[in-house]
Image (cartoon, rainbow, N blue to C red; front, top):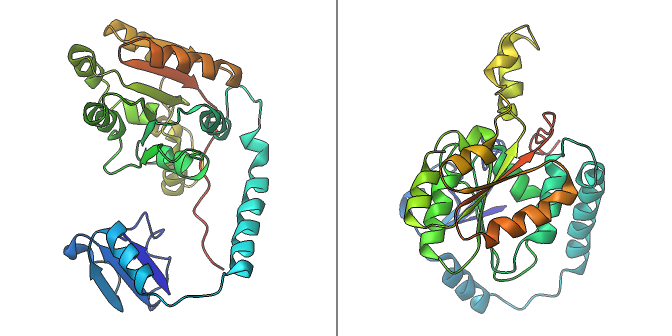
Amino acid sequence: MVFFIGSHTGGQVTNGYQIPPQGTPIIQLDINPDELGRNYPIKVGMQGDVRNSLRRMIEHAETIEPRTHWINQLQELVKNWKESVSDVVNSDMVPMRPERLCRELTDYLPSDVILVSDTGHSGIWTGTIIDLKHSDQMFIRCSGSLGWGLPAAIGAKCAQPGRPVLCFTGDGGIWYHLSELDTAMKCGINVVILVNNNHSLNQEKGGVESVYGGQTPGSDELWLFPDADFAKMAESMGCFGITVHKPSELSGALDQAFAVGKPAVVDVKTHLEGIAPRAWTPA
């Protein structure tokens, strides 16, 4: 049985409607009644606020024994997964691996930060590798098409002007709405934009190669970009810009970006081969 909570159960969430398989018993809780049963036939649909509904369910649930074995099993799965990615998470490779970038961010992020993730690889990297360690940290995952992250971060900063806001995007994402840095500058919206800059839209590499039958001559131009300097672009609009090449440079660059008192872009040069793994599916 699967319990979907506040989820639209779309193709990305379900890995192309493969997880869970059709026929799996489904319970769904959502504040929007239109979402209930929209993509999966459900056994039970509940309309309500997630937090309050879950609290009511817990109040009415029978007392159960602690599920020690189940919890231990989950912790073992997490441990095994972390070990499987430890090489890239701790890599000193230059250009930087995006997994190492996320590890550095985990260690750095302020205790009250609002982390806004762009769509695509940015959502995968932040959702799988970055750990939030403080109860006041907030994570807003992609809720629109690619490029959504920058304007969304500006909106988050408007809503919470006293909190640090960091947008995690890639060069493929920031190209969509780069001009909104000018909006942020003119309006005094001091958001920090971190660009995972691998001069590509490498999340499309596999799709392009599947259409063209592999790495055929010229096909890479469909997902490779020029090695752009987003720090200089930011400075040309009156914002703060700084470039990071190595993991050891990131913390100091972010210190400057959050302290400068105007919109800031941290252009992190990362490895072209940093491609997020395919979602896990049961055998």
